[in-house]
Image 1 (cartoon, rainbow, N blue to C red):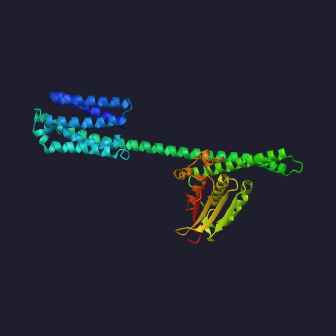
Image 2 (tube, helix red, strand yellow):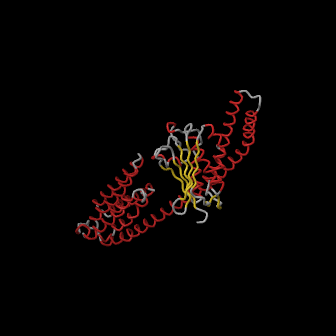
Image 3 (cartoon, rainbow, N blue to C red):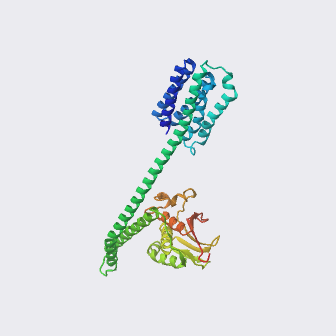
Length: 405
């Protein structure tokens, strides 16, 4: 934008140089030439990358030189009116939100200078002697230029706003198309890979149960089975992440008992719990139903409980507490005694692909589990967070609205 304004101001300075030369006003001509030089310096600053300095110099130069030149001009010419057109220029060359002080100062400056001219009677009458008739003729053109440049400012602002809006709409449309294509691709890939992966996992399970399988075969079968399950889990997470990032997440809410979901999830991850000899303790002090989407809550709690099991040490402990929270909400707390999460990283872990350092006990994973859980809980009008544990470890809590609310 500032390049266009610079062109306008250069045109004004050229007009000022020519008009003052015609009027045979050497002082005003010299000032106008100085203004043109200042604008040329602004263009040079733009070229070398000092954009803010160039904009400030451009506006200060134009305001001050016009102000000084009006001290040497017959006020009948009304050249000072052009200063009023400068009020809107800072809004075009600067962002009001990013530079409010600069914009305000440079917008007020021409008004202050113009009022100084009026209240001091244009420098106490120290004017170049210009014929009144010539000055009156220039009065019309000066006034015309004021309105012309103000209209040009509004037109340019509307043009840029429309251009940005059009570009934004096109970008959003392209993003939606890309999101749909990504979802379709991942869905197709998920469908195509599930059948062979299920065959691999099933084959590994059959090998484990084969009566003549040696110890090495059993070990390899366990490795293949676990690797296959990890890939299936990663595919499911990728599909879920695509859904929560491709558009609004719509939940189908109905009353449900969260304990049934928790019990089912513990059964699913029981092999991991048994392999690490983890003690799971469940405490329930509220038996109310919650208003939830079963699929979303099941997936969210699976991520949370699975994380607790992964990050718990050998012979660790997981506590799941279901209580009534504040504001007619039900709270599900999941606590483990793993390495814990530092306070300054508790919001970071909900961001996609944000994973903690290995020193904090990071296991393999996609880095989107908590992102998916947060998106689903939020879609169900709930809340999720991480609190401190007095005895170490991690305490993740989920709050959901009660069904009879």
